[in-house]
Image 1 (cartoon, rainbow, N blue to C red):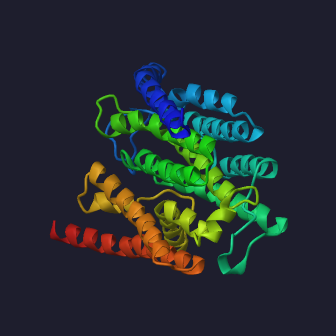
Image 2 (cartoon, rainbow, N blue to C red):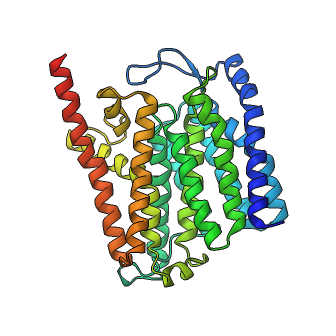
Image 3 (cartoon, rainbow, N blue to C red):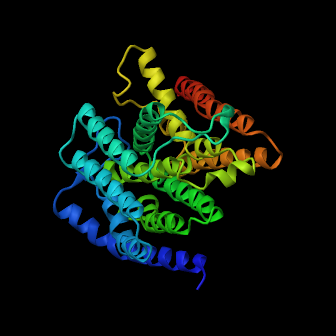
Length: 358
């Protein structure tokens, strides 16, 4: 049986289990009043169950454990434990509510434990002529990147189907690269999670028994994506063969994470410029702006996911046309700024014009 067939079987099992588990988790959340309550800045009119992340993990857990047992190393177990730890942290935040500082502290500790025991960002693979990084640069850079990625995914969870739809696409893109470099176990873990997320995406976007993914789910997704970045930019990875083919690893990772990261930077910059705290929630994210000009939740999530996928596509075209590793990154950075900072200005102006007409 080929590696691809094994991966697809595990993904199919995860999809089926997640579909079966979802209604049970929904009933549990309703029965125990684990709900997201409506507020002025939230979009829902009624309380919504808040255990989507749990449903995704429960659907994936048996295939994940199976593949880890089949190909056991401490790496796969470490990734699973890191992912579950972030899910638990976010779940506690959903349930009890944690201060921003305390949650950041725990996230920093968990990321620190992961990178010091498994792998970290310690190789730029030729970007700006840099290969191996000093540990004094690698550790703070990895912690900053990890906590940043995790929270940027958490902050995009504002409309139905956005964070889960983005996760499905991002997991799949990273899985394709892992298959390309023959890291089939890593690819299998990613596609199991992608498949397990699909039933949640359907119910969250189209179903009557809607749940929210919650901070537990978004922190889990962010944790998995951050491990992909850590691995691809670590000395332990097989990215050396990608560098020799002129594939910009940093540019690729940035392209996949482009909209969540740049939109988070844009929103935080705007809050600081107004004299406020960058961590105080508001309604200035791209998804809020799309809603403000009349887009539905589905239209908003599809539009933003399409923009992010388009950026990955442009990066790929730049690579195929022979752009250097540095130029690939500059193209991605330019597109990231235009599609968040630039698009944000345009959407805000359209929203203002619409308000004046009304």
